[in-house]
Image (tube, rainbow, N blue to C red; front, side, top):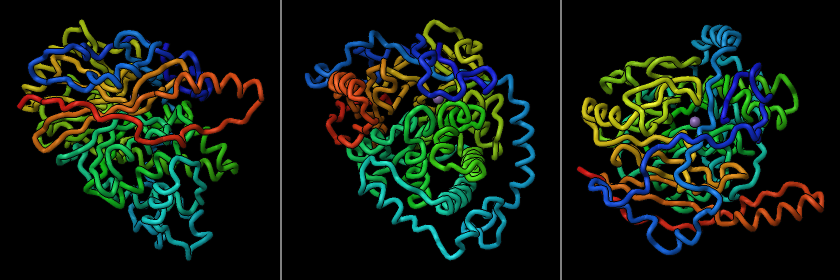
Length: 447
Ligand SMILES: [Mn+2]
């Protein structure tokens, strides 16, 4: 079963753990046509149909994450200690006054200053290749990111047009494909719904590029927190191991890992697009009765509970009445169609867009199309063949869906067999990333 467990109960940080595979949590009747509120035209062109993955049936949604509650206490204590020090870190991003505890590292090269634009340029020009980052530049980036996050409300206001992306999970190639298709981050507006790290092989490239863009283009790039931006999760599911592998010194990698999680704790938890579309990583909450309930949540949050926890972890589920305990994840809630309908009425919004579950075509509807699940990591697991998708909201609040196809699936499978026989080193096919996808048809959203 898909499970994300705390260190003691878990698989020791193996991101490819087979046990973390599909669970039948279904975010709804997404493919049903003829709903009055939205016309779904996006999958009707022959191209898309041709490319449909064979191996995934129905609208299976994977809930890869299970909560990791039980063994938190150690983490919590550590985290609390950290809180004390945090005050000091609110200084200038360049850390000239040495306020951040991470400046030890940057101090070694005090004359160097992060060239943010250059960093972004380098990423966008090189495509999806692995980058080399100096420790001091990462710490400086994180200091800047912190200042930038702290300026934002826990519920951020986002204007249209906007591209809304679900989980990326270290699939840097997919992030590049998204930028190629929907527009470069200095031109187009993006809202990311969290889960940048873990599982994929390039968590660092994904989170570095996105943080850099958010700092450089604060009115265009918005990042929300996902449940993988929690230390008890990203310690186990890949991010921690990636840093350890790339920065061999235990002290260096620990400082870096802690610094990242400090920034994650400052991330906003939800967004509201033009006052009408509520977006978050997980889902709704019985404790969400007014949008101000989200605005009132104070950050940093090292541990999430109650409303914040539901925003990061909850799932929609067919057949459920109201809110029920989320048994698959062992944390937070599942909520039924009735809960979506009553909450959107109560909150005075049109609809909800969230991520957090793998869906076959990259997006799926729920509750009479008043909720959309979007997932932006294609072929998320070697046994899956899911599309990635991006929800594009235009000025009239109409939705379109851009899909990235797992088109190389069969070919890659063959190559993998050959590669294994040759004892080949891993090679990144990500570089093929191109916009070999089609924008979906226009979807009209109700008023
Ligand atoms: Mn998630």
